[in-house]
Each structure stands twice: as structure tokens, then as C-alpha cells.
Amino acid sequence: MKFIVGKPPNINFNPQNEGWKSEKESGLIKLQILVIPIALVLALIIDSIYYILNINIFDSYVSIIYIALIIIPLHELSHALLFPKGIFSEDVLFGFYPKALIFYAHYEGEIKRKRFLLVLLAPFIIISILPLIYIIVSGSKNVFLAEVIFINAMASSIDLLTITQTMKKIPKNALIRYKGFKSFWKEF
Image (tube, rainbow, N blue to C red; front, side, top):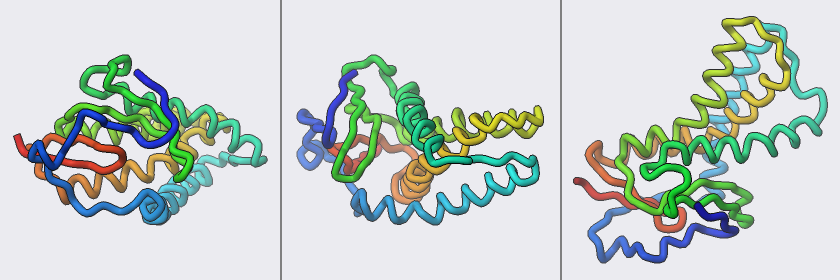
């Protein structure tokens, strides 16, 4: 496990020489713009549930900042928990890319498409869906938990978009690997 600032390097990966294919992908900034509709739909759904349950969130912007500081590492750790060699593997990177203002968890090896989809989905399920089910079933009015659910759902928007793009563009029996922020795949 390593921590870096900047793009993930993947020094020992030469996709063109190793038979990997790539799809045309949006740049990071464009991707962040494309997720806005997903984030808005999630916000509307969650806020509607909170309205029905009479839960009021975000009385101050300070709470948003504090919760974001908690969510970011938990979100990225949730991704890494499902990486093939585990979270403490030397193939795992946690990083921050200042140019796009994003934090990330990165796996430097190959990963099967199905597992990749689970890696992307993990933070949304673990930090948003399961706690939201708990709030609905228990009737809890825990505002802190409600805010955590909301912010993580917004942060998961990019993962949900990536899941959709992966399912459309990459065959079911493919391995996926990244070089920097660009994905490559090959069938196995």
C-alpha cells in the first residue's frame, strides 16, 4: 500500500505492447460534469426519503466539511477492501490528484470485470445503501448518519457512471487494468 499525490504511475504496464484495448473515455473534468445528473437524482431520492422520515440535514456548511473529511478515506478504503490482493498489497495506491481535486484508490494489477464492478459499487452499498436501509427500518433520526449517507451517495456518482460505462463497453469475460486514469481491457 502506498500514498501518492498525482496520477497513479503504473510504471511496469505497457498496454499497447501487451495486447490491451481501450475505449474512448471522457477526461476527469468532463467526467465530473457528466455525473451531475446522477448526483442530482440521488440527492432528490435521498432527500425525499428524509422528508418522509422528517430528518433535516445540513444545518451548517461546517458539518459538510467535517463529514467529507470522514467520508473520503472510508469511501476509498471501501473500494480497496475488494481489490484482488487485499488492501495491504503493494499493488494498492491511495492518492490525491490536485488538478481534478479527486482522491482515489487504485489497484496496479489486473482485475476481472465482475470484481471491478463490485469494487466500484462497494462504497455506495456499504456507506449509503445499508445505513439508509437501517434508518428506514429502525426509524432512526440520526442526523450525522443521514448526512454521511447523503454525502457518500454524491461521492459515489462517479462510481455509478463508471459502472454504467463499463457494462456497456467492456465484455463480461474481460480483465481490466489502469494506466494512470485510463482503463484498458482484454478478454480472457
